Amino acid sequence: QVQLVESGGGLVQAGGSLRLSCAASGRTFSSYSMGWFRQAPGKEREFVAAITSNSGITSYADSMKGRFTISRDNLKNTVYLQMNSLKTEDTGVYSCAANPNRYYSSRSPTYYNSWGQGTQVTVSS
Image (tube, rainbow, N blue to C red; front, top):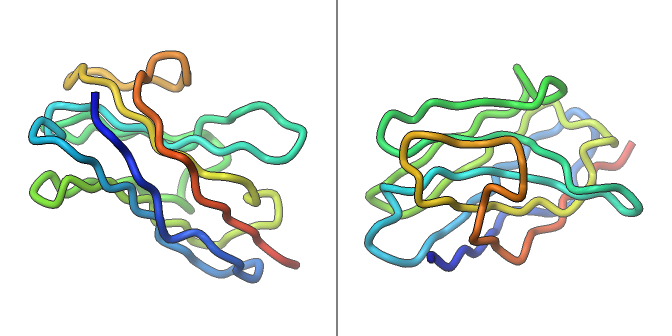
């Protein structure tokens, strides 16, 4: 397993941008597929975006398409989530997750076996 640490959350006005980072420990990060999820108060964890390892195939939740971009830098053992045109409904705790399958990512949180502690994103109106 890898250890994951998120950063980059904060308070931003609606329409603004944030870039989240997820730093992973371990030398095999490049072989992991990665996902971002979020959880708002009183709601279930929700898929945001995912990316496979070497090929970097990405997928997004419909409500994030065109606004969010997931990317990774395998030399820095880091996956990013660029969030633009933020809305108040994007508020929540954002967590990254990892699975050692390099070819396949998933929208299901149960697929991932390593999780970070999360970073709070608050979008004000």
